[in-house]
Image (cartoon, rainbow, N blue to C red; front, side, top):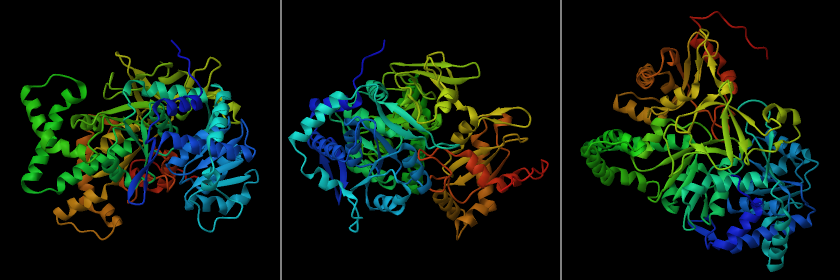
Length: 605
């Protein structure tokens, strides 16, 4: 039965009043961590809302946020929405072309930046944005352009009158009002602005977090880019449950933040878990003698305990006893490396390899995988502490319906589904029926227990020359469980067989090479080494052994750099941009098939 929800801004205000968290926002300053109370956060939100109102921002106007994860991000977000205006988040490492496209397409009148780099980026091309009237800067450079406004000055004098005015404004914001336009990172094609309402966001934040038992004493770590809806709505869920949000501006410092902040909950994408697993294995393999034997034995015990720890099945008393010993000696140290207080880990944004989930469950770090899209605000289904099944993405959350079309595509209907694409009515009609069913573009099935299983992206399925359909993501996830493989992309559409592009884990490879008497001066030398090819061939054969013959990569190419957002080969949630990668490495791919296929015509420049 559908539950009535208030607008997100009212839910936020109610939560600040109800919980009055003395550490609502936590951030790193200098050599330590500082906090902002709920009362102070509201004062700053109200002060910025008053300043935006004085700049002429009214309900429906667009205001962009161009900043890394920091307290000011949410302060700006709630200030904008409290006026009934529309926030337009922009990834803080966004390319200039996409940044200008988003600001132009949305018609943003004001942009809020945080940090010197972002302020300078806006200053460089502001003349290309005639609709942009004002720039508000947090911690701006000393030589700030004269017409840029300082955030610190705008909120300095905020007081009770501003808070009262903000409260009145929030009461006028309705649940069906447009709250934000989020531009999809897009694995293919031009980005589209997804229009999400106050109701989309408030219902999803509350429904997706309902069964996780979040408490006001919890700390949630915020490091997924807030320009992406996944991290943003997870943080909304923390605020609305009275928990603290601790911000990490740079991914490189997440490991340190885990140890220092010691969060209880966090949300991440599969690459985070892949990297964390690789670091655990690498650190364990640095040990020698007895310690190395203890670590290796603990890994064997973890594997034996998977049926029990991950799936709740029965195992022998001996397995349980060995697990408890390994837990005290090894697993507890793994958890301590992540702060020692993790109660629940969420995974989304891309498929998580079941083998990876099993490992974390086996060391008492439960990972709850979910599923969603920007167009669904985002959570559609999720595993929770009350109902979890490893290998699936969980059951539909409250107020969401899921059904499978005849061709296997996942269709979604509910409070979470977007209003449509901004200024793109035809694109909206292509994915959203008049009855409200959204076509996700993902292929999946609902199992006998009501859990959703994702097969692959509808547009990413490969079809071999022999007519076999191959889902690349599960194969890639298998390969990335190797300590020697950092990333992988399966290719082979319309080819006789599938192959794979491999990005080695150079740290692990170089360590293994030294142990084997191999020395390399550069990564290019590592990638070209026959020794490495033999090592990777063995890993590929071992890991793909359970697959059907047509799914097993017959050949592979070794790359000397990863697929990243910076080089345009991945989205900022680290999904592969397959078309871009195939275009960039078309010569490499062609060589994999050179002796088995007729030459293909070259694409014209």
